[in-house]
Length: 95
Image (cartoon, rainbow, N blue to C red):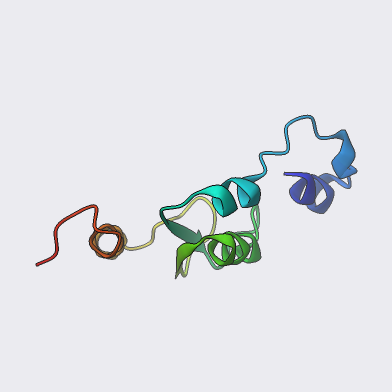
């Protein structure tokens, strides 16, 4: 959130009370992590999603040609991506 506060409002990051430090949380998580992001998201830049996926021990990034409020553009493909991830993470049994 501090990065986004500066990006959108020019608010210094140290003034943000709750940083919602997702990157630190993802780094500490031992399981597989799926990050889904719209490439045209103007509220939360796609680079944020890329950094989160890179920070994960077993990260998967799925991007879509979408913004922030029109995500996902293809619901069937979205659910297939989630199913594929859950099988990869061995949360759902494989075929």
